[in-house]
Length: 358
Image (cartoon, rainbow, N blue to C red):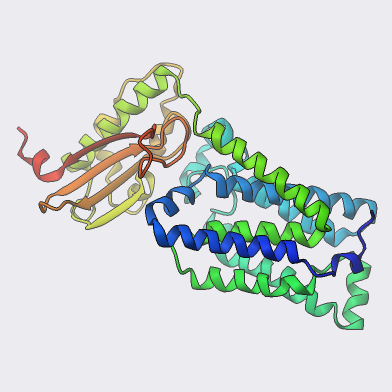
């Protein structure tokens, strides 16, 4: 069946139902278990994989329609969907575990092979996404109501999403601005992927695409949790987190860092912000690893699997300060919070206890 503008403007009850189900499910999990909520909002978990899968599927469907019906603007929307899908899994870095080029490691705020995390290019990614949602989900349906703008849209091949989805695009924008929970951006991106998919599919195709995306996300979530690291890389990461912890607590870490009541950031970020003096990371710099593991990545505090090393500081009940340095491990997922089977590699100590050592 060829999808026409009129067909796509029909009420989208399945799309709205799925968008509502995602929103309610996420809020329910957040209410009952904040740890579980935060765990599943991390990279390489189901929410992120499903977001990437739905944007990719929607992009393929939209691009096929744009090419066969010669609709350039719709092709641009398809390219945006491909871009978001690629950015979600860092253009393969999340799957393969390669170390990005040094320019990405030094300038990308997440040290990933992504473009949206370059503040100098996209500003704050949240506002870029809001602009796209507003333009596509709100302004295009509004423009479709007027004969003059409708003619322009037809000339450039722009298909507006159904009017019935406009309130959901609006809700997503409000949530991104309001940001009621940490990681709100992660699950609102999933809602956006549902809306973009629903805007270009009929009911049958939407349900098939949703099922395909869900199955793909489930497989990738399962597979990504079981990636092995190899003995040399494991030994290297274990030695490096211990060396980083030793350096940070022996003078590389500033008083502001070690006295923070609660802190969790990338070691590289702490270096850039002046919380860690890179010149004092002597033990880390001289750590011996297998010769097949490049040492140049240490300049950017990156582990053998291409992911950032992290430093965490927090107060303990007895008044001392707990300091941790950790790698997300070979599966490149943050899963130590509530998962007993976590492969995160952690070194920790108390600042007070460490200071008393000879």
